[in-house]
Image (cartoon, rainbow, N blue to C red):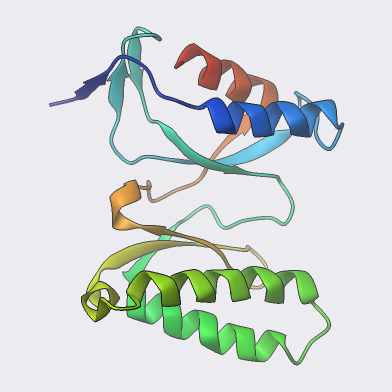
Length: 161
């Protein structure tokens, strides 16, 4: 059964997207990657079913379409291994991103080692296979990325408010 919601609060995401457009970092025609929820919901303010937006990313770096499911412990191990490899290279931006993910994973399991056996979804950079984002089970992230223009995404988000 589809869950019903009066609206979805996208206030922060709309603000971020508007700021990106007004600063000319992207345009309304720029294509974005979108992580959606796996399950659709009915949004009364929009008057239809939608797969809610969890997150969005710019089109660079290229991301893998498939979002990989793995145990939190495996994701943590992967991040530590990649971070070790990246600290030996010149790519500071990827190393900084993986370091943030590693810290988040450590915080998530701190004081609750049972969380290591939970599933999470990992979004990877396309060419290097470096993890770019981790979604825990409670987000209900879909298994694949979607693409949408910034303008279309902004309209969708506003329609759901």
